[in-house]
Amino acid sequence: MQLKGMLSKQINFKKHYLS
Image (cartoon, rainbow, N blue to C red; front, side, top):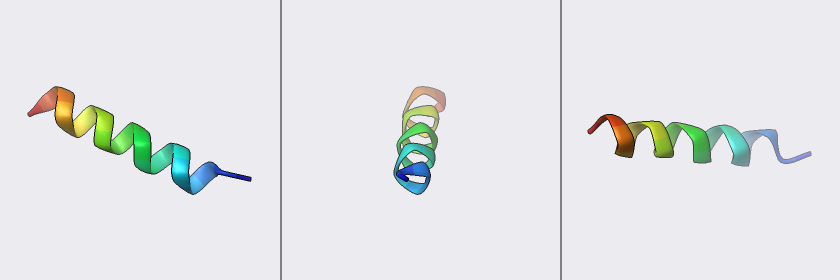
């Protein structure tokens, strides 16, 4: 399972998009 990886990616994506 790569839930942590997916979450990390989504968080990074959102952070980059929000920034």
